[in-house]
Length: 559
Image (cartoon, rainbow, N blue to C red; front, side, top):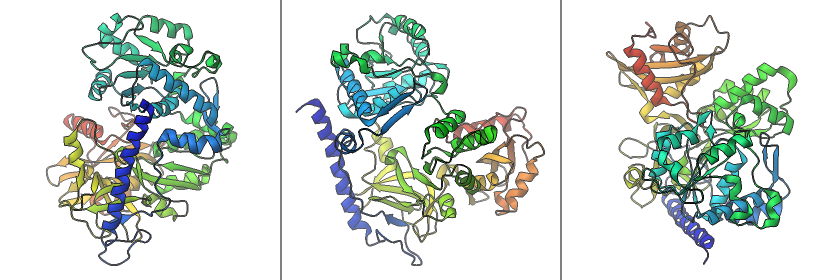
């Protein structure tokens, strides 16, 4: 059996136990609630299972591409990358690029099961790499482009990566230079030889994608570091493809100025390419709306129809604007996490508007969910608790970390495995799920649990508030009180902290009103919220900022 066949066989074995788990859960949960309808009985338990149709597929990604995509969609557009010499590939052309990359990786020494780490912005190389790794059974490890050099090195060692593929810079951060400055012994590795560095004992090769926009400069960068290889060379005849295929060289140049989110570029692309779907987190959609305000009627977004918003709640006013101004009438909200592959709940275009913003919809097919209390008991419908997910979509576990895996992936009495998400949620009698916040992010004021998400949604309904993030602030009297960080719209010069307090008091129970408010951009206050690469607000960073501000004796206190 070939290495590729072995890898495919391994993936099929992984799918099969998940299907068995699904069947076991199906039998177990039927006594609680139907798969096709949700209980409206008083006292019903918060446990649901998704429908059994469509049936589960056991295709691997390469099998799916070969048997389902190419025969039916070969000539349809697969990838358009406007900033890379206008890369436009249909699925057949995309398949050629994937095959060349896969053969190049194998020829370079990458084996099934190897970890291939990558740090780069949005470019065709990354899209091809994902599918190429799947085709040869290698494991792609996508690193956060916001990582510092020491975090990159730690991650490489944590997953024992054999291969690193990166661009010289990401978001203007000099990655390649930083790595070689930190590990000067790398520079002594001769050209064409595997890397053997004591600080990165598993790493054997580094490939670089040119995003400099200057071929001569890029060549100089590589010549200074003989152990690095231009990724384009990986797909040349030297590494395995036939010489006559040389005209289909895989990659043009990925210009760094466009490798991260740009609302201007998004608006131009949607308008000129007549896109029908737009996916993102609320921050991205807000940026697009701001760009529309800037350009006025010079662009046409009427081709848009659908999309998915995820990552954080979508305020109802934002949803209305997305429908009215971006024509996203079929926009849906998705909930999930990396550990659950990722989506487990999602709204539909047919849901009532309020349910499309106040909830994350209903459970997905073949997925099982329950809401539990601190003792692990399933709570009644309408009662908040921790959301747990089970079914075919669960991860196998955290890499080489069984302790962390067992802390969140727990078996019930029947042996079914449940992922404890750490999210507080409420399931209603129709089966809609509402995420009310992270359990560790709850604000406990005088013994009462307050939901940061609900406070944030209330604040962002104010016409002058663009974004808001609520956190717990230590307090001698109540233990914790509400602290909020607010980003105002440009021109909101008359806004006052008391206005925010009154806004919340008039729309929620008074205890939800903020006791401390930081206005982003004020003297001594950062200008924007800290966020992950996917746009989620980093509450841990906000808590650190808050401690610093409180220690400095800031004037955020509201009386």
